[in-house]
Image (cartoon, rainbow, N blue to C red):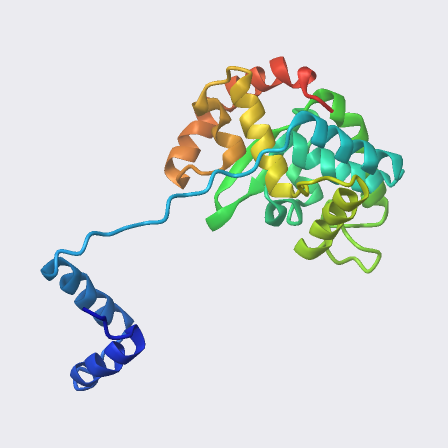
Length: 232
């Protein structure tokens, strides 16, 4: 039996709804009950596993950026590599979010969930030099243009596109792929999922608050133990 097209069926059903003066929530509820009446199971698309760069791809990408001798680009790439933050999080880092003494950065993530991520002690000097430069320019954000505007999402992605193309990679490198690389790498080092949590930033605000009080010190201790083995 041939089905009526969805658009035509919607028009047929619409006449029953108009007299109800429906809003979105009402329509949604009706169709939830309709699905139940017809015994239609809820199906979801299986999530595709993210592509994680292999070590050789990562090194080629990083070496290409390093050889370009643009210090700020290298700093941005290292920050993604060491912290696993998102683009939207990086462009919103303010100078006063960074604690060089404890090697930590306060991040405001999705849904304004705050978390703290560590960075390697060996990265402190390079980051500190950049902070000093930005402070001299009276900047607010860690990365700002000469017009005192924070970097854009698109601007950061263009940096990655440029070096991926120059490195002639079969799979381009993006900030999100570096995020997956770090989380996968930490897991391979035998670090417990609970201690990887601050890098993923997926916890609820309540559990995150408990975590930050009880476990951030332990998480950073484990991070410091393995980060010297990081490929770049």
